[in-house]
Length: 37
Image (cartoon, rainbow, N blue to C red; front, side, top):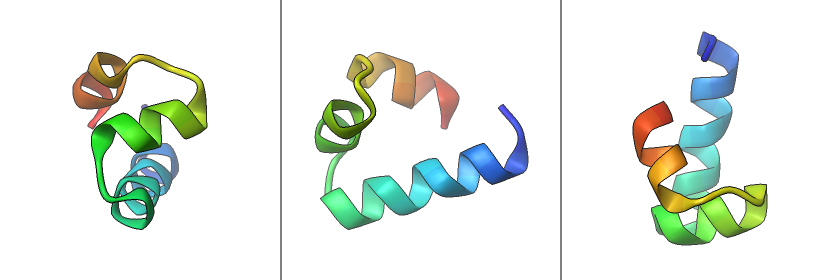
């Protein structure tokens, strides 16, 4: 994961308030976000 993807992911998590909500927006499992971040 490059720096831009990581920053985008961070912003999505902050905007949505949780890993689960960010994962739902991105269409992935929450564990995928946790590993990526």
